[in-house]
Amino acid sequence: MTAPAETETGIERLERMLGDPWDPANPVGHAAVLAADEAEEPFGAGERVLDEFGLNAEFVPPELGGRLTALDRTAEVLRTVFRRDPALGLGYGASSLIAAVNVWTAGSAAQRRHTADLLLDGGRLIVGYHELAHGNDLARAELSALPGPDGALLLNGRKEVIANARRAEAMVLFALTAPGQGSRSHSQLLVDKADLPPGEPGYLPRFHSVGMRGVQLGGLEFRDCPVPAGAVLGRPGEGMETALRSFQITRTALPSMAVGVLEGGLDVAAAFTDERVLYGRSLAGMPHIRAILADAFADLLVCDAMATVAARAVHLLPGAASLYASATKYFVATLLTDAMYGLSRVLGAQFYIREGAYAIFQKLARDLPPAGFGHAARAACLATLLPQLPRVARRAWRDGGEEPPEALFRLGAGLPPLPFADLALTSGGRDALSAGLAAALDAPQVQGDVRRLLQVIAAELSDLTAECAGLSPRELTVDAPAEALRLPARYAAVLAAIACANVWLHNAGDDREFLADPIWVVAALRRIVARLGRDPGRPPPHLSEPLCAEVLARHRDRRGMGLRDRRRP
Image 1 (cartoon, helix red, strand yellow):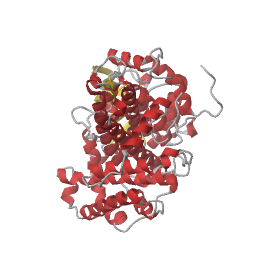
Image 2: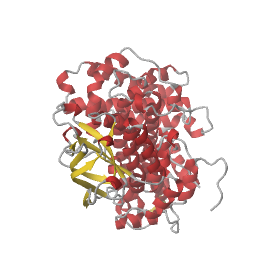
Image 3: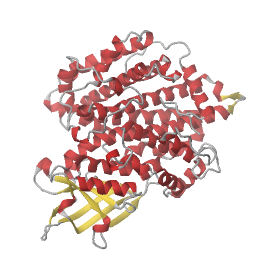
Image 4: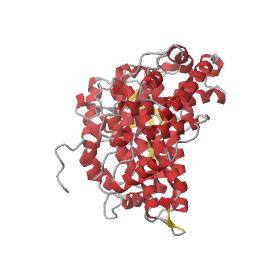
């Protein structure tokens, strides 16, 4: 192994340690990933690489000795792992992040220090939110932690479908602590397994799955299990608030990490296109195939732009992060899944074959839908957004708002520390990101197709403003009609378009030639406009050609498929 350059970044170091995925002799290459998947076991060789890299430090704030300095950077580090093996990314890393953010959000100084030490020493932390009987309805969670006769809390009940249930050293548990207290009925507890009596917790049988087969999904069961009253995170009864604030971080980060799955799929499709001959003709020369690659690439860039901007918004616009997190979880997860399915048409029957040079594609395709499990479903994200939209429409969209900071869109620009304490349950009608649409239309370099497409987006936002402002209280409840849920779905698409346009505008002066080219943002905006059901107009001549050429060039040159266009070792 060659010595790293002095200027090597953490992401570059991780790429080098993971090596060439196409090399059959690489112990963490595609062949090894597939072998672990077939065995339905955690990818041991990959975990050892991540141990050596110290991946857990990415989940710990810098004041506690970690590297969680910028959420978009942490997501990009994990994207490198998800591109290789989504089960490794979720099972080794993201599951600990999902749990840890609750501690950073509400924990005491001692709880934060203890959790940081656990992670930095290579330990695992899990979170138990869900119970199969209640799905995403946390308010009905039945696991209880009620006072016992000696002042301790007694845990009773179960939590299910938890990654690393057996392997983790500590847990964050969402539990009923005050029956009959409404929204203040539940708390979160930080519990070390080493502090529990013998036989606790009981472990439920493993849940086997179609995707993420290397993630060991299990469950926990407690019977009069004592834990100290001091295990509660924050004040008793604030469990729901802590969860909702923490979700703003993880619902933003998880979709961004999952962009790596589409990156991996696009790399496989490019390899297949480069190497396959059909009826005596190279696939790379077929316009239909080139158009599919170009469309998937455009979708990937949309997802990357939206997820990156949303991650930076957690730092810069924490008061409105509840909007952007749910919109990103819904839109990016939907678009990634659709784009991966579209790519499967390039491989044809090869896309579901579990052996051979391109077998990694079927694993990536299976792993993508559950990549963000443990959070609310996409429909639940829309239901979270819907009640906020009337006030946002009246306060931010109708009257305009303060322009978003330029650093929101500048890739790599410095960010303040993650403001866990400033995350709000609702935006209070604030939405600075949407003001980025008018700012983009005012920019002199926005001309031609970019301007025309942004004007379509502006018309969509105008229609949304009128429709959302006129919603009745009945249409904002959990029983809202399906038609009402289409409004937050449309809003999410508008945010994606604003993110794309402004990422292009604010990064045009750097040394990434492709990022400065308007061709990608035209393609991205066309894809979004079409998803909104509006007419994107006639495409510019040969729109697909430069995008497909870029995909094939990046595959051949071992470069990443995302906005940052990083070179791989």
